[in-house]
Length: 251
Image 1 (spheres, rainbow, N blue to C red):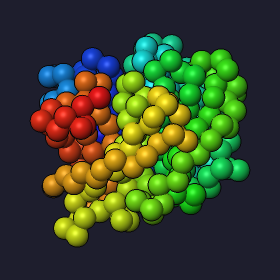
Image 2 (image 1 turned 30 degrees about the vertical axis):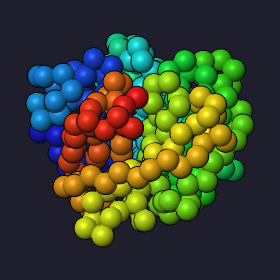
Image 3 (image 1 turned 45 degrees about the horizontal axis):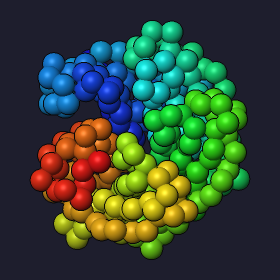
Image 4 (image 1 turned 90 degrees about the horizontal axis):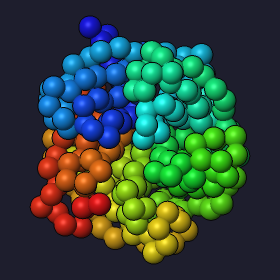
């Protein structure tokens, strides 16, 4: 079995046949296989990789699109950790490479996102209540990251838990647990539009969306690349929503 689960972040392989959960209960990245692509109810636990040697409070997870790199951000070291997978999408083949500290920007990091080209990295946290962006001069190499801007989400969310971008970099989504929860305890997603793709300093708040049933502490958000499915991790469960009818949420 998969043991205790306290999930902090969720990520899917681009074909939807694998799901990865960052599990702070085990300080691990847990890998699941889906019998039906993008249908999280068909996920079966496969294997796990411990990140305890790098951070005992892991919070955010991201993969390179080819599955050969993995990135984790944690709350103890306040750093992004980069791993190389010798077998694509097999977490047990991961080996630790290097760290990039974000401590001078955020002391409670909760999420990470990297642009499809690997040349822009975004982190979010609940101390600064903002998104920080970094330019990577060498794609997917976090040692080349240079800070180049921030965007405050404090007026919408006081304890942001995760950040996700549309594939074209024109839409940004923030989920959290303070004014990010509706009165019923359901999570809200704040949607921002970037007038310059990928540059968060050009972001403006667009709208908020409320999602039923994923009550309690929400920790992660992920969109299917076509924007028609939304996944929220909350209370050791993955909640899946069809959003194809909401044109404003299509990526």
